[in-house]
Length: 380
Image (tube, rainbow, N blue to C red; front, side):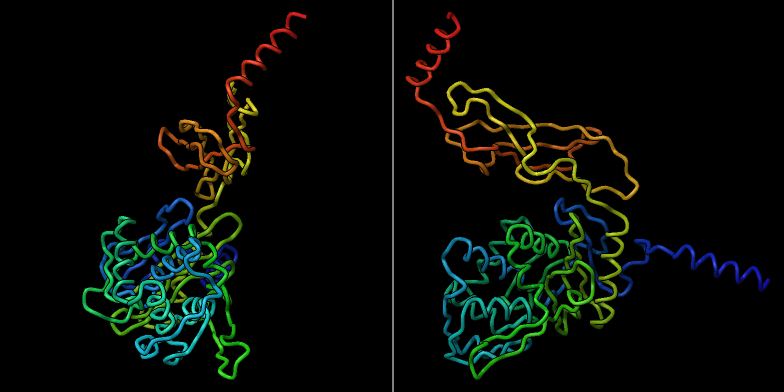
């Protein structure tokens, strides 16, 4: 019997047990794991349950901040004067003082690294005038995204009645932030830094998301904690072409939260892969258009065309090209259609199409002249 037990132990060391989906997130109230590019759900637990989400609320504030940066309405060098309302925020903070002048760049770091409530309110007031108007924009943003289980009363995530979201909505918000505003990862991946670097009031920032320090591929995204919400985390990690986004809400302590998030991410990386079928700029079609220059148009992928698969998957795919009506001129990078990847007649991935080089329309006179010259050369 003793020999049999030793053999069993030896076998277990040779073949370590895998983490199965049923073993995941035993302590968290609700959570989800998705593949970022496709949005495919890999694991879920009570994904539509409405709960408090603490500072993960700030991801919507970050979406708006980066929208304003990308439009040029604000810049990283802009100087913000801190109001009494912003400086009086409790909870996580970077200890702003009323009347202090601080750059947008430092405020973004304060939000992304230290989850500063004061920094978030200062940016809200700078963009919208008041926190209330900024929160209206936050609610408008999630409504446009089609989210059904999210409503905000403030921009920080401090506990307040009728302020809630769900793990699925949070995953979609995180996906929007990462895919449409990837510069966020420059800041959410900072482990430590300083604010007011060249002043007497220098402030040391340490990231509240410890996963970026010790989990392979982790580069964001947002932590949270209040009495009502418990310990929360939106985490993202990328290995190769595969990026995962995990959400855990309602954990009882931060160590368990971090451990269960790592188990979620491990499950995803161990069970799925990203299969890139064609690379960016690969030619998928050509068109001859008489009134275009050049008249042979090479239609190419705007980015890599990839599908999410189980590790052992050996699927066969079909491709379907759909082109928009072509209006000239067309610049390289302009979206002119899409290519669908089909498996068993179902679309499993889509990528935008563009052109290999700029295309212009030639004038009718030039076209007639060109045709006549070609005709003459053809006779002789």
